[in-house]
Image (cartoon, rainbow, N blue to C red; front, side, top):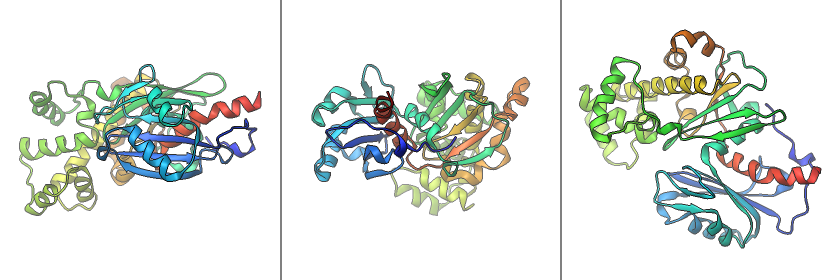
Length: 349
């Protein structure tokens, strides 16, 4: 799939020249302004805000637009949570986001709220080859369904279906489906976490918020040694995931390496589950913030083995390609594409 050249498309004349798009996550909020005739690949202005430092998305939007001194013709936001009738409770924040309130904040311009995985899925047809890393070449079927699984702060899942002339993203909350162990070690993990959470979802073991759970299980449940220097590093941070990942990639601590291997195995298994559930013959795409950072481990055999370990359907999954999305703001790109696409469609009428 190549990049669409929006500069060659006919645009509607707009009174306000800028379009606002955002990627709203539990850890960070990315906002960007776009000049429509330049297309969504080239943000005019972009800024990252720490989500937890603000009381609402409206506060961030107000601050951003006041600093930039611009008006906008519309806005589209990918948000980390389910969207119902233009309203969303952000999963790992206390924010409730409402499209009408946001519209008032930007002077009455139209606002769309998208599930963040819908936004990532929306970006896939617009990604350049350089935005993708191939893990499994497979044998993709033209116009086959595409699966998307994205471990970041949480775990999101979505898919795209071919409608006859374009791919239509479909959101889900598959990351909150029940974790199913596939090995004796994973069964021990489930038994370790179940008394703590009651319901153990895939997000509890396959996301940034789940990395600590895996680490704690190996330390407290399996007796892996936590070196004093590592304990000191972890004590000084609010989010232990980057510390665990960095030490795993540098082979500095066995407990970190084993944590990351377990994470990748579970991710491979759930990616394969998604491939089966939506029959992703066009490919499975790994999005989110974590996969690009752990490519050396994703390239190990453990990921592919877990992905294809589906009994009678192992051969089918061997033909399903798997890619890592390396575009640093895929959800932002997808939100911008979704929000601005009607402008080009109207302009072509």
